[in-house]
Amino acid sequence: LLPQTVNPIKYQVKFEPDLKKFNYSGEVHTEIEIAKATSSILLHSKNLAISESYFTEVEDGKVMKIDAILIEFDLKWTTLKITFERELKKGCGQLFIKFQGTLNNQMTGFYRSEYISSNGEKKFMAST
Image 1 (cartoon, rainbow, N blue to C red):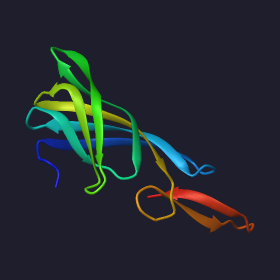
Image 2 (tube, rainbow, N blue to C red; image 1 turned 120 degrees about the vertical axis):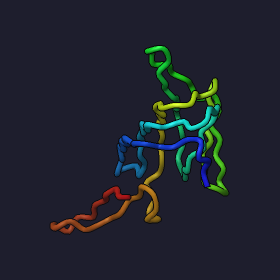
Image 3 (cartoon, rainbow, N blue to C red; image 1 turned 180 degrees about the horizontal axis):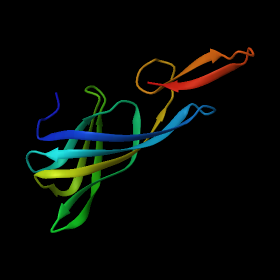
Image 4 (cartoon, rainbow, N blue to C red; image 1 turned 180 degrees about the vertical axis):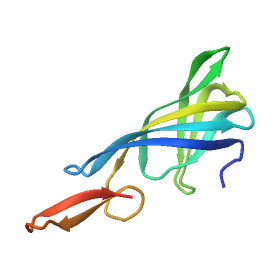
């Protein structure tokens, strides 16, 4: 179970699949409520590479960007821990994550499927 100190409110996810190389890139912007000040966020994650992450919060009317300084994966629990350069204050903010993954054929997560088109051609699609 994930800690109850960080609660997602709304997600905006963008996927860019490459059906020739069977991989994808993407990003997610998550509106988050921080119930208790913390310097890290724990999320579920499986088979992703994270290339960038930061958190934004409003302080004195200004949007403040807080960069991630450490990204750790726990393969057994399929979690991702993002540690930031300073403590995230109680209240609402935005978490940004840029990621890459593989479109495998295991029918879990974001994966690839093949089908035969109406003209008999083998094609691929990405699915969740």
